Length: 173
Figure 1 (tube, helix red, strand yellow):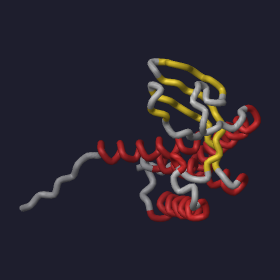
Figure 2 (figure 1 turned 90 degrees about the horizontal axis):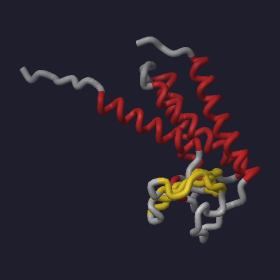
Figure 3 (figure 1 turned 90 degrees about the vertical axis):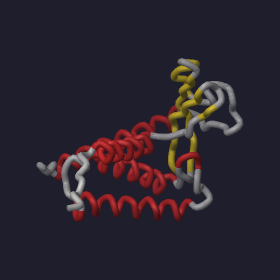
């Protein structure tokens, strides 16, 4: 399989991290922090749409010291170390041990997302989250950012590649 050039990876990584950084900066400059007790749409943020098939979407400002849903927020240093190890493992897989090919792009998505959140942690001591969905008024989704979206997209992409790859069956003769 043809290998993608390193410059393509560097360009995509820089693009994704840059978009994440700019969206976070815009959110910091334009949105007031969301109070956890707010229950009325747009939850202290900027309303994007309300009751679209029962779904609300707003842009809010949330400071998150943890990961999704604020998990492990009481252990930010351990989470930072975990993220740095993940970035190191992805870099090793991408450039040293892995076979480069179609599986590279999802790794770039994950690497960009993890790096964006680590940069946030180093700059601010927490991650800036902003996208907030509420489903049918009863199921609020975790507030997330561009980095989180990139990580999820990369994981879904890898999963789909794994599930749709040709199956090789060994013959038992």
